[in-house]
Length: 232
Image (cartoon, rainbow, N blue to C red; front, side):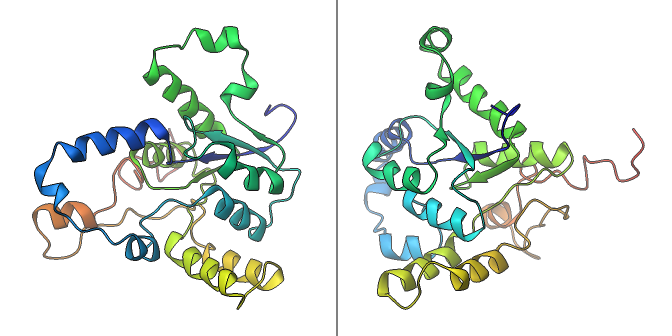
């Protein structure tokens, strides 16, 4: 595909298998059952992955056209075609490994989930643009790998800011078009994988707080593991 077209690789976090796995684990953990999670607060805080519909609006606002090829790296998307159809209406060149590979080729990976994930990982690293819908471990590893290879373009959605804009769209206070595009583009000016030093933990923080506030080394290995002189 890359020989003929440049492509955007989108990593969806909403997978049926993963969701089920998380549910089973939480059912077995007593103190998690007692936790009261406010979904509205979580979403407004940017803690929820973007929906396929939101992805479509986001990409259009960023200037991507209908001719853009988009590869989805994920298992079975939660909600299936019902949720993915809106994204496909925006970007008809929507593909996945199931579309690009033959049944015979995919048969070799049957019952080998880690190898299937490796396929998505390789394609993600080699894509022209990588966009994660959520900051999971795979997304962090891919971003770090792309930085290591020369800070390849990785567009990280500002989920908190986007949710606010999408809320204005729902209320009719904003419409898709030049104004939305300007706001979204400005919001992501410094979220496209350009070289920057890794964020350190908050001063004085300890334990879990220190770990949570420090940017993952795998997500951004700069400057510790990236040559600064240009000599190898």
